Structure formats: structure tokens, C-alpha cells
Length: 226
Image 1 (cartoon, rainbow, N blue to C red):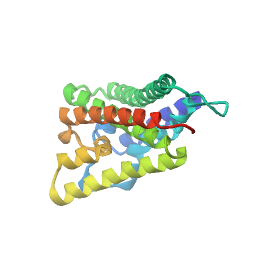
Image 2 (cartoon, one colour):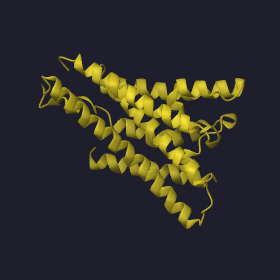
Image 3 (cartoon, rainbow, N blue to C red):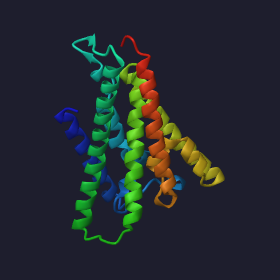
Image 4 (cartoon, rainbow, N blue to C red):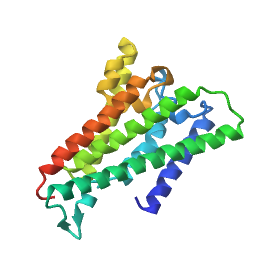
């Protein structure tokens, strides 16, 4: 990722945090989830802004490692796997950058406001779910890029992200909280409240990451020309 892209992520994180605290939100609002019974589109956009920014600056994360000076650089399985490992490593680093920036900014604010009473176990689970789900979202975009152009892959990924949110919201409002719906529409884990977090969701997010890595590797093996 270019230095300018790092700056974009940091700026979006700062703007997000400033908005949350200007609205009087609780500490560590970026992992506190969204109240489905009091939906606010602006709040949803701000909540997801750093994630969308990360998806945008991570476009072409697959093909940039497969093409050099306009020529395909993978010819054998070993090179394909190496290209996949490099791109997956970069994705995890980009996700870590975003989550670390969010944690650091919120930690500094907690210190300034002298807020010290919070459940560390819940925070750890929430941050882990946040990281794993965002990473899975980037892996999903990476997979689509092996078939479609980067802008199309970005649009598909964003549609899946917001579709998952609204479907899970409608189910919760009309039928109550549904863990099954959250597992099926896994990108929605990013938006769920603390009271719905569990180690099951963390485990499921980890499994989704592994599944996406596996299908990306299978897809990459079938690519002859990009």
C-alpha cells in the first residue's frame, strides 16, 4: 500500500472517531455495533467509512502480484502459490493497519477522558471479530478480482457488505436476534452489538478466512491469462 493510502486510512479513522465522540457515543464505538432499532444511514456510512476506504485502496491486490510490466509472471504452481501468499500477507497487513489505528486512536481518547472501566474480555473478542471479518471482506474482494476487474469486484463486495447488514437488520427487527442469519451473512459481524458477540462468531470468521484462502488458491490454479 502506498504511503498516501496509509494516510487515507488514518484520516478516515480520525474522522470516524471524531464523529462518534461528537455524537456522544460510548467508548470504542467502532466495535460497539449498531442499534438496529434506531437505524441512521449517516451513522452507518461513518461506521463503515474506514472499511470502505480500505477496500478501495486495496483494489487490485491480486493482479498486482501476478503481472509485472504488462506480462504474466506466473507459469508454474510454485509461482502461483508464492503470488497468492504475498497478496494474502499484504491483505492481512492492511487489515491490521486499520484495526491498529482504530484501537490506538480510541485508546488515546480513553486515556484523555480517564475511562478505565470496561470488560477486557469483551473488548478482545470484539476486536478479533472486527479484524477477522474485515480481513475476510478483503479476501472476498481479492477472490472476485481473480475473475472481474477491480472496480467491479469492489462494487460486488460493497453490495454484499451492505446487503448482509440490511438482511440481518430486518430479521432482527421482525423475528428477533438470529445467530444463524449472522453466520450466513458473515460481513454483518462487523456491525453487531456487544451483546451478540461470542467466541462462536470469532471461530466462524476464522473459518470464513480459511475458506476464502482455499477457494482463491483453487481459482488461481485455473488462471492462464490475466
